[in-house]
Image 1 (cartoon, protein in one colour):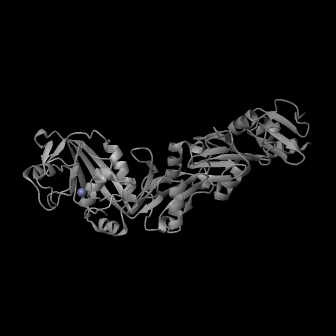
Image 2 (spheres, helix red, strand yellow; image 1 turned 90 degrees about the horizontal axis):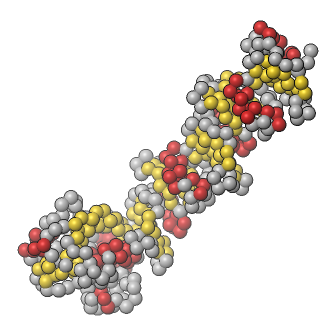
Length: 438
Ligand SMILES: [Zn+2]
């Protein structure tokens, strides 16, 4: 009796589930082994692997991959029930095929199989494979998707798993073809124990139950890392990296601040945030609102203050469009200012509101005097690129200086000589102490 006959007899022979033979035992096309087909499966033998049966959907998958001449080569087990239950598998010389009724049969091999095995096979959070190992769209790497996540591999980086909300964020950014590239770690617990992360070639994705999953990369990530990652005063990212309104700067928001970057300033950590609302009666004519907000981000970041641009609302208040500001003295307001600033609508607490009007009467670029408890300023349509930042500077407690290098110059912000204008340390301290920066 051949080894194939011995295996067949052990499985019950013609009366067993394999049923009667349909062909004689033959040499395999690869010239190494032998095989015999039966009504309900096959037995394959080679000197190195011995004789093992293979049948059903696992046999179909193995056949589709090229039988013993495919990457899997010969079976080294019979089909076997998985320890996790609900599934079946054959191991092969070159990998494994796993099957469940829900997932069908898929092969897993090499370093990806090794990673899956190290995590606990189908009993891990990954569960069963949903795909064969496949080439990534960028042509460089390989992956298997599983019920509970994915394993990605490249020759340089090896195999790493990514799953859950972090995998979801990575997929929305474009998988390995995004700026993040491939994972360089498995999902890991953060040193502070509150979150999870994967590092990637081009950045990281951090997740906590409270903040969700957000990417952080480049020089912003470098600064955050240098500060101590999530254990810094910033905590975890609460946004992906965002573009400033003028497209020239970048910033990421964190639980307790933000990091701003521009070519002019490099990366700057902001330890407080000012929440800004725009209400527009007349749009400015010389510089757009978005340009003024971008300029404000630029200067305020040097004072460690980030801007959260919360809302924009159009107001139709023609009677207040040429706003009587009287002498524009802080702590003193006209009836028209009282009326205008009462239109805070949904704006809460210490949030700052900038009202864009056609003009002030008498004509100024803007005026920061506002009723108590309603922090904000009016900005006229002829305002300079720095008027918004300057007027809100007054709202946050700053006074004029006689220095055209500084944002708070009293000589008119059109006369600023060194854009972006300076905010000095004592002014930063005043702004950080304002109840409108948190
Ligand atoms: Zn002023």
